[in-house]
Length: 510
Image: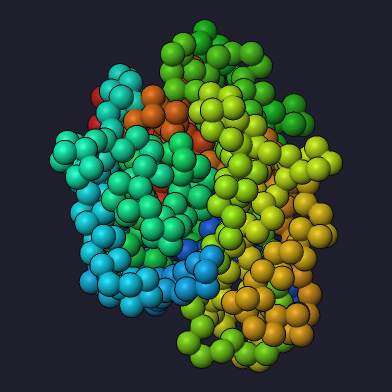
């Protein structure tokens, strides 16, 4: 096993239970991949995903690999409200967790009567898309004839009154907002946010991206005491309990292949390690480098996604208690949608479906002037030295490879002050995690973050299969099917383990 990310550890635990001896080689000094944590002066911050959606993925892992259920190993809590949205005009809406009716009431109250009904009608169609796409996209290995998924749009057509009630099929998420939500700017921002935070351009993301808000609002938003790093620790400890071996600081530089089959790996110190199977939980560029010219993918297979953005994260240690009633997560929407999308994703049509991201005046990848900002203020005593302090995390989607300046960071903090009163006076210290830090931690070029797999759009949003053209070599994690995101990583590990244990006839759990 190459890498100790969540997908790889999920696969490792399942393979160990099936009777395999599993050795994980991780070049870093710890496990968890993107689920890192910074601890300083009694403060604790997640540096990757900090909320969990679709916890059933990890509940299933713990049921299948031991007697202790997930909740005995990680203290999970539903976040309430699930999120507070602050729109460009200053309007705020608190959306409750796992309550379709409550979301509708909140939207009616904040945005005007009828807003909730429009959103509910959209969610009904999103449910249809979820029912059609869930199994082939998430619960089964990628079909050999994956072009069927590329051509099939699971989101249903929408009746348009202005077209004499003819049905018209939305091609993109932005068109879904236009057709279903009437182009209302705040509802549009709400919908498009689900794509943006996952590194997807709503102007080009297929309509099937509607499954993203459906997934979150149907299955809930969960936090963990100790942050999502606690989930990584629980999965690591489950692996250890199943006698998975970990070698940290063990850098794999080459995958050894003989007669077209992977037979082991070579470490940086020249050590050769034999293996019946090799599972790689690394970014596409790192995998290609390890193969020394051997093609991992068959001709015509799904290519790795490219042009994906990165994340800028600012960790803030504050004096003063977290106020009562503070939302765990607040989304502060951009005041300039066009600038944000052009700077992060480029101008559609300039080169294929998406052009190069608009640069800053000095020619470097430019950050949006007023990016959509996710502000996390967890009610978790493990995140602060005492009740008289608060830990706040700011996250914005930025171009991969972006050079982050002190002015950029100050601008993010100034924006956050709109939803964290007294921020400047309360600030003790800050730490910044740039795309360069993401690249160093994950090996992804420019610090790009993988997006979840989506159907339609000619397969541009699918990910390469877990099996490869090299027999005995498998790919796992966010850069392989079914793509990025914490639940998807667990699904990737489940599918990879199934392919190894049951062979190519494996079709997923029934």
